[in-house]
Structures are given as C-alpha cells and as structure tokens.
Image (cartoon, rainbow, N blue to C red; front, side):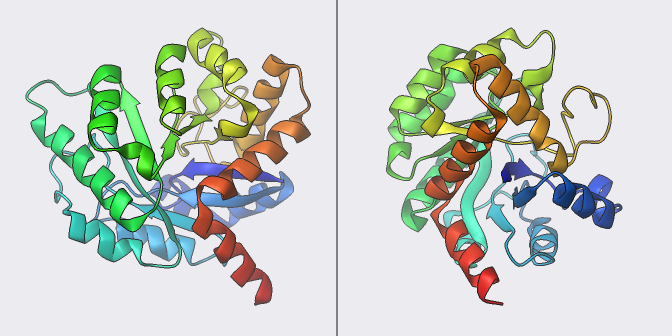
Length: 264
C-alpha cells in the first residue's frame, strides 16, 4: 500500500536490525523502498541491501554534503545506471547549510549528475538546502526538465516548489511535515498537486512524530501519509495510492523490477 521513495537502508543503524525493520515494514504495509546512494564508495553496499529483497530498487549518486570522496564522472554514473535495479541518478544537488564558499566543486558535481541523468534517461533525486536560486539556475541551464525527477525531503518555500513543478519535477515530503514548527513544509504539502506528490522517510534520519528523535525506518512512512491526509482533508488511503502511482510513473524502471519479482 505504501512506498518509501527515499531511504538509506544500507546505513549501519538499519542494517544492524534489518529483520526487525523488514517485519515492521510488512506490518505497516510498506511494500516498496528506494535505497538511495550517497557515495560511489558505498554504492556496492547499497546494492547488497537492495538485492536482499526482489522488488526493492536503488539509485546511484554522490550527495552534495560529502566533499572528501571520489568525485563522480558521467561515465562512473552511467556505468552503474545500467544495473536493472538502479532507477534514478542521485542523490545530488546543493547544500549550503553546512559548508561555505568556495563550493564550485558542489555545483560542478550537480551538473555532472544532471548530464548523466539526461544521457541515461533516468530521473534525478535532488537534495537542496539553503540554495534555492543556484539549484534552480543549474537545473535550468543543464535542462533537467529532460530527465525530470524529484525534489526530495523538500523544506524550501512554496515558490521554489512551484518552480520545480514547472520543470516537471515531483515534490517529496518527509517526516518533517509532522513537526510542530514545520509550517513551510506543511504549506507545500497542502499545495502540491496530488499527482506530483511523493512520500519518504529519509531514514535513518528525521523520524516523524511520535517517534521524533529515534531511529527512523521505512515502516514509519505511514505517519507522513497520515499527516498529509490530515492537512489536505483527504483519506490516508488516497495519499498512499496517489503517491504509489506517482512513484512508479516517475521511476519507470521500478515497475519492471516489481513485475520480474512477481514472476519469481
């Protein structure tokens, strides 16, 4: 019923209790997870986790917050993108919250990911924090609308969300929407067209209320759906169904993975 469109199940906080997490996902009817890459060095670990379940999928990319890692080339990303379980490029983007200029390396890395996504014809997973103008400018300059993608764990303004929507992107809402002081995220969650909305945990981080401060996992994406349903005045089932349909519409390779798993 539910899809977690962005999680880090390969991180030790979750792999150390993998069976417990899997059981919780099954109880909460979280049937699909996209395990997102943050470095090339750790990408094999991502794939090892994904291959433990026949229908889970992955991405390949290098997070903008990791400076002291191998900088990816377009060829690096394209080679890994041919794997049948890799359905997206990222996460990539810009993060100006923790790091200070000069950040040319971050902007160049972002451009490389967009170029690779356009060549691979796979959607992007974009992380943006405190960098709205540069994020949108680079997306436009590199024709990110050709591949499309999702603005994950979105925390920026509705104006930025509108600009991303105009470029054909989806908006993904995390457990932050349940936080009392998250009025900006809640506004976005009510205004995004239902056919362009995804839900995620970004686990093991950002556990939703009432689990805030604890280790997050994909089973808790149901609380994101519940809060969005409350804000929009619709049912949880509507949020679950629309976000699931949106997920498979955006990440087109994921549907083939699920169909192959059903044959096994």
